[in-house]
Image (cartoon, rainbow, N blue to C red):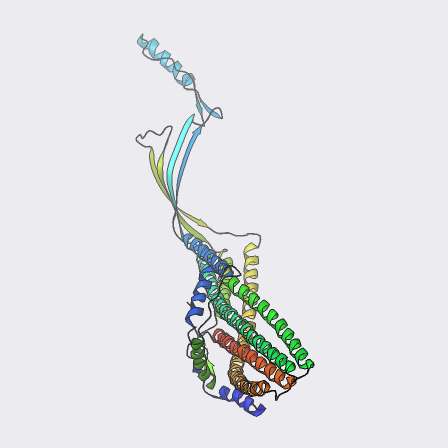
Length: 460
């Protein structure tokens, strides 16, 4: 492909009107693995725990606006303490004696002075207490801040799910590529062994010299070395993919049927015709927007702490020297409690300044992320277009290399081609096949990255 043609492929779609990109479903095998990852991935579970903690904070903030009801019981036994001396005898006994003397009787008793303790020897109070905030703007603002934080946490989970989807697709197709490389190099090993057999036969028939056999033996060892490295790459790709799914590293991975992969490729090729528009807002940006709102509400809550508050308190229960119910033991009282903090050591102002600084940081971060995501979307689109064009070129190269090798192989069996020509043809075929497998996987991954960048597929 010429540079001018490649330029048209990259730039011409940008001039077209943006259209929504059709959602291309994943192959059934890969879709099943994605479901497994969404259930079992440990990092996703951690994100979901954070979202649940944010929801718990929201529930706590909501509960602060509701009535609070407490059951309080108190039993007290006292000895000693201050007393009130009441001289009843000193006051009344002279009067009683004078009356008895005048009447000649003794009807009035002699009274003792009384000493009354401030503390009862036994006392109990059992009551239900209800407290309802009537006007506390700090609580309302705190509730709004907690709601925004919960929304931000939920959006963060959604963003992580999209990243997990991309990681699953990328890991699976890299495993497919490594598996294809092992198969290609195994086939190349068979071809070099066949070439070695043919050349030994030619040497035995005095139709070739010994150096031909040595040249092929060296090629056999080179292919063997590549094959061992490919098997190591396959094991690593298998382990990485299974880690995402929280499975044993050596768990078996099911391959996608080649016909299914071809159908997927057929669905992807037309998508490179025009630049699509995004399917929705990136969850990262939405989460940062909610985080900014949370910081704003937190600042307002700190400022509201300096305003007056009004609460209703109601208590109802029984009290007395014992738990036996008696007339007058029950009581009920209601109070309106107003409070206005006049000075708190500037703590409210400090909290407000801290929240405003956090809001400014979030706003700056959001602008930065917005530019980064816009660049990411442009890069993902260009990579996808190049991947589609590259796959067509890679398959043309593979077809040509296979035809050349078939022609050279026939002439080699007839002893009409030297070993350098045969080995070069074989090497070119193997290289073309490896390149086609890598380019095919790169296209699948490029589409997954484009899907992620433009928020195309709905979340499971």
